[in-house]
Image (cartoon, rainbow, N blue to C red):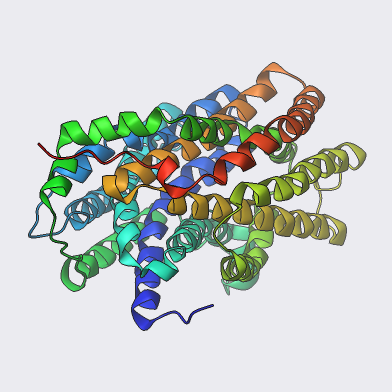
Length: 449
């Protein structure tokens, strides 16, 4: 394994900070706000509507071609979008602070609209960052881009879930921070939004003043590749490739092998009285564990045979879902009150879930970076990431909505049956497509008239 250069290390830190921006609204709207609303008895149908806020991440490929074509050379192809988008996000967070979001948080329609706006902005920042990361690292350490994405988005998610819930809890703050008991935690939702605005302003100023993009002299053919008609033609050609279509099917469906059980179980536990303070305590313990796990996964992750590794890990993910269901049925009251057993239960499943979800994410990210076509800039990687995100959004909405339509036992039965069928039916053909050479995943270069 070659040593990582100082330049690649600095690049890794920068992109981790940029991907951190995306993790904040994703964690806030997909977990924290869901948890708060669920705890106060908001119906599952309303929660399913709130989950629509994360869908903009799934349709980035519709606007990615425009970001590839239209930009200011004096600023840089990717910085043209990263800089203004992050300033706009800072303005939105500031408005949430000044309008006191905590006073209208139960207005699910408005909350969904604000989430759509923030995550739409975040999705376009991601398009630019995805394109930038493809050329930012040296060729031998290109895989660090996937690790930076995982670390950054996960850390942003931790900040908007674990850290926020912990410091928002009056129980935690009265026990460990306040000298005199108070009625609220030290970090309100309003203040949290202000902190996000400040972080975005500082980071964007740094990007604006202290970063540059490599200026590559483009040939006539490369210039033609960046014309909007050519970009959409390339996008159409990529989407029409049989191997990519099969990969897209996989990315849309694979989470149904385990996620409905995991999502429905956690939703039922919160609805039945699992305190968010308990969740926050466990998530706090999980912070250093998560970083250790990601560091180990990133260190030993190698390019090649990604889907063969995926199916190996999938068996453990299905087993985790079955064990989660079995534990809930056998010990339904275990988590309704605090005890050493409830904490051990949450820690065990927290470590298991974190390890498996991160290893699948990095494994897929490594595959995406390997097969993405650099000839079409961010469009190729964004297309694949968009389908991957769409699969996650769909399974989350369906899992939440399923609890209002079916019994928990039926949801679990469907999940396990689907997971086992998926493994035996799709394992061989999916492994075979990843063995194809790099050229089979890319557009065909055409001569310039």
